Structures are given as structure tokens and as C-alpha cells.
Amino acid sequence: MTLPPLIRMALRQPSELCSLKPKNKAPIVPLSAINATAHRIAGLNAPNACVLSRRCLSHHSYFTVHHRGATRRLSPSVSTSSLILPITSLASSSILFRGQQLCNFSSAPSPLSTVPKPPSGGDSPSTSSGSAARSTSDPYSEEKTGSNKSIFAKLWDRYSFEGQTKRIILGERLFRGAQFRANDLRWYREGRIPYEFRPRHAILTMHVWFLHKRLLADRVDPHAALLVQEELFDILWNDTRARIRAEGVNELTVNKHLKDAQQLTFLHCTHYDHAFQEYAEDPKRRFEELAAAVWVHVLNRDEECYNDQLRRMAAYVEYQFVNIVLNTPDDYFWEGRIPWGDVPDFTEMDDNSGKRLEEAKKAPKGFVELPKPWVKTLTDSGDAYYWNTATNETTWKKPT
Image (cartoon, rainbow, N blue to C red; front, side, top):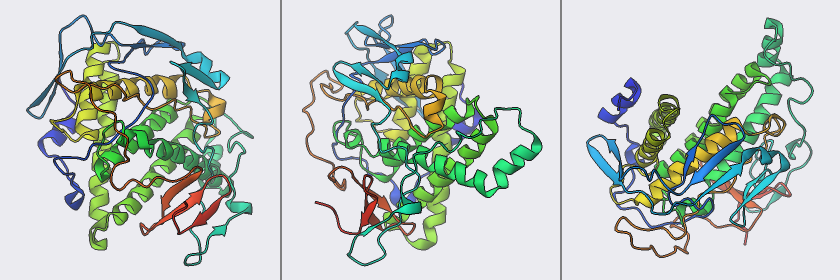
């Protein structure tokens, strides 16, 4: 398998986050939804349907993931059941899979215009209203001029106060949707992904990549989509800087850690690009490459991770690519409403010897469980505060 030069360089000289470098043995953690014991998605070129298959490449005995001299040998699932999901039904707000909601346009606190500022007082909560309240209007509903914009219209989009406001609002909505999904407890509890800086950043990067590809594929207003994409990554870098500060690193090294995180982010996204572009017509090789990407970037080449876990996450990436990039309605997308579907179902997962794993029930160390609709967010300096997405109330004290 030939990899792009950027990935080959990364495999020779992997970038580390210094003090944020993950531990060798990560705590056990958990998750739940697309019941994908070996889900493989075929037919990415078919716009109306995708196939979730539990055969997991039953026509061959094994598939192998090679990365930097390390090899993971993944055995296929023995189940042969499959289900065809009509993705066009996304337009009717949701689809059901095994009795669970697979796609729901209101499953995340979206649209979100901006996260309200933290409380101004020490311990007293504050309630924001007016301009800080959530906006539900479509920032691009008044003009969708397509790709035939004049140079003056493009300059207006980039430099006018109105144009900047629109893309900031939409960029915030898209990023908060990705952030909300990446912070789901099930990734780190049932999914057993280490609750550490790099794995958490990789999960967020994965979902930002889906939005990035959707913006590149946009045909409503390609120029505005590129501007929103720039804003989306600016918001990602600001959030990354705040999370680095929250880790307690020395302030003088924050920019160095940010550059390392940016390099890891670009390599992660490039790996997904390579898988879908190089193997667009080869579902088997594409699935192998996605499993390798998950192992390298999300699980940090953990030799003790489970093949079953890798297969389910690789299938999730394939499903979301079809779901977000190819089948999300333009009207929903330009309002910042993302039909993520549900997270993978990590229940009834087997270890590499075929033994059924015990269901994880406790949140990982460091994860803050909050009553809905409260979420934890960070100031630019990395200090945590709590935000009620329903009332827009913010407080320094942890809600109970």
C-alpha cells in the first residue's frame, strides 16, 4: 500500500504532545448505537442508500493493518446479517435502527450561535439574554447565490460586517455540534477510548473532518462554504488552545503544544482523505485503511486495543461520511443542524480471544457528568464553567 508523502513522513517522525503524551495503559471506559460488530458500508457512490453489513469481508479470512512496523491482524465477524438503510429518509428527521434512533436533527443542542460568556461574578450564576441568546435564523437563508458570484459579492462576503457575522454564527453552530458529539460519554465508557487529551482531540477532529468534507462538497454557495470552513478551523484552534491550558501546561509552551496538535490534526484528516480517495472503488481496502487511521490517531497505536472495537469505529466513519457528506439536506446544513445519527454500539463487544467483555458502567476518571441540559465549557484561559443550553445560564459552580 502506497501512502502519501505527508503520511509517510509522519510515520517516520511522529509528533508528540510532550507533557500531553498519553500513558501506555489507558483506563477502561465505554459507549452505544449502530450495533456494528463488523459493520462495513458499501456503495458510497449510491446517493440513496448505504449498507451496514456484519459480514465484515466474509470473502477473505483476515485483513491486516500495517503501520510503522506494527501489525494488527483483524479477524472478520462470523455473522452474515445485513440491513439496508434508505439514507434519503433523513429528510423526514430520523431513521430507526434496531429500535434506536439513528439520525435525529434535534439530537444535539443545535443550532448554537455562540457559547455565552462565563459568569462575571465569583460564585454567582448569571443569565444572558438578547444578543447572547441562541439564534435560530438561517444565516444564509436570505441569499444563496451559488457559485456564480461576482468578485464584489465575494469581497462583500469576506470583509463586510454582515458577511463575517453570518459565517461566525454558522461556524460556531457546526463546531458546537461536532464538540457535543465528541464529548458524548459513550465514547469513553462503553467505547473504552482513553479519556486523555490526544484521544479526545482525535474524536473531535474526526467529526470536524466530516463537516470539512461537507463544506468542500457544497453546491449551494461554494465561496461562502470555504469562508465558513476557515472559520470552523479557527474555532477549533481556539478551543484546542483552551484545552491545552486546561491540562496545566506552562504558558510559555502553549503555542508549541498547539502546533503539535495542529500537525496531528492535519495528519489525521489526511489519513481519512487518503482512505476515501485512494480506495473509492475498493470497499475492502478502504475499510482496512480506516481501521488503520482509527488505530493510529484515536487509539494511539495501542497494541492492547480490541479488533472488535476497531471494526465498529471504522464502520462509524464510513457511515458518517455517507450520512454527512452525501445525504445531509442543504437546508438543514446551512442552518447548522447536523444529523449525526448515534454513536457506535459498543455493547456485547468481544476481546481479541473471542471472550465477551464485561459491560462498563462507570464514567472514566476525569469525566464530569452533568444533568441535562448543562454542559461544561472552557474560557480562553482554560478555566471551566458550566452552561445551560436551554436557558443560557452560566455558572462557575458545578450543577447538581
